[in-house]
Length: 291
Image (cartoon, rainbow, N blue to C red; front, side):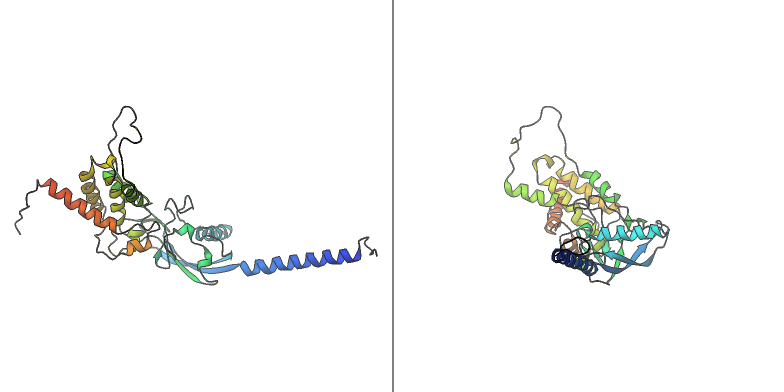
């Protein structure tokens, strides 16, 4: 039987039925995946500005969006309405560089463990949830604008001692300096630090000891780092104090929020290195004070 449009009636009905169910299913699926959240975002024009929280409604979101993609969508809406977009840092968006440093609901890098802000997805939050977003809070990390802070203090700490002597001449053989597997793995674990500053942001003293200990250890453990071993330890700790970071009081909060799960055992290593450097510097003689 041929219908009036020249199509087989049975096939036409089947095609129409499939098209309708597909369209309906797509709309239903899209409606199910859409979500919205209310954001309390810290806005601050510069270091001199006192700053304040502003609230926004972020819509047209899906659970599979990353946290930074959600901010991108919100900024597009703000710019479309002629408003100033929210300033935040990002680079690789693959959990490697550490630029995407935000305090989400009071926790550096947000919910979860061993992950950065850019690797947080909206499925970690309930639909309609209120999310508070702040920059790192530390005197050594001044706010440049909104959620962006100046972390160049870390660069100056590394410059104070995070280098190794380089002898010019022919290249050394690959196996000229033998390193045990255990030692190389220990150095590699310390070198995993990406310098994001979460340890500072969560510490009540704004201490950078976890960061400094990781940078010191990954060099002090290897043969190439031995010439400056003692000087490096003292110089980097001195630079940390000069930058205004606080002292460690063993709260272990730094380890809990570190996206690379750097262990506080590195801080114990740093303390031993500092004591060893001080003993050698005094020529194994006790230091006599007036106290």
